[in-house]
Length: 78
Image 1 (cartoon, rainbow, N blue to C red):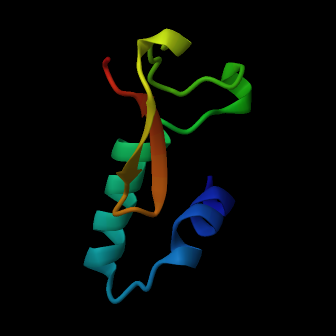
Image 2: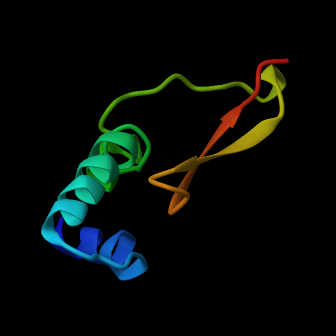
């Protein structure tokens, strides 16, 4: 997890102080790491399971996560 945090978060942010780093880590884990990021040990599923969206359910849209550092792709309802 330490390497993941460094590569996916800290290397792309300017950390000014400890309070900002804690807030950034909290947002990363709650908004991206558990609900969105795939894990190989979970057969490429996220820690919080999400429903499979069939191709006919709308166009794919991009949603910024963690201040735009990462993105979640979902289907917009038709």
